[in-house]
Length: 244
Image (cartoon, rainbow, N blue to C red; front, side, top):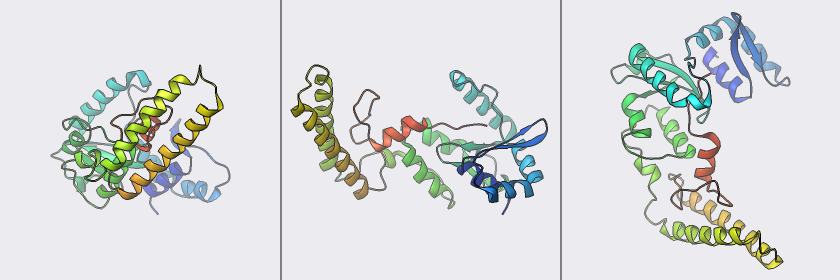
């Protein structure tokens, strides 16, 4: 097993692996000695790999736009950057369109400038974490992204579910707004029943249309009493690239 696979296993297991004062620094669970031993056995290779990974220049969350600008500049200057992606729980590489992916270290899943534009910029498509993971799984088989819109567009036949989910959310929002003043057991009982029914219907929809991971009601907001699986995952993970 190579350094990249060990780092992937360690990160997914909850370890933080970095460099402090020129030495490997590892923090994480104490009940997984096998992973710790693997890190020790491949210490030099892991240090070399970490040294090659992109290091944030603007690490504060409020400076994310500045950090993304710097990331784009580094890609343009150096050809590619190596990163760990929190949403995908995997190592990725962003590279210029003119860079041959074969020149990028193995096990870093490559994404070209053109592919990233399809995912985040020019197409104007907002993808959920689930959709990004589906795309990433395809990328790991050698696929090339040419259009990501299909994953965010409700498939034909899904109207039976999306219409009912929208109407259900309208009812939940209206009831949610009345609950501070209306504390009757009947409203609370109806709300709980319809909330669970909404979740069951959403789960059924995603089971029938596994290729789609878009929002069934258009765009959930944090003020809702419940968020769909897609928006909940997006909100939780923020669809961002974490640069350690």
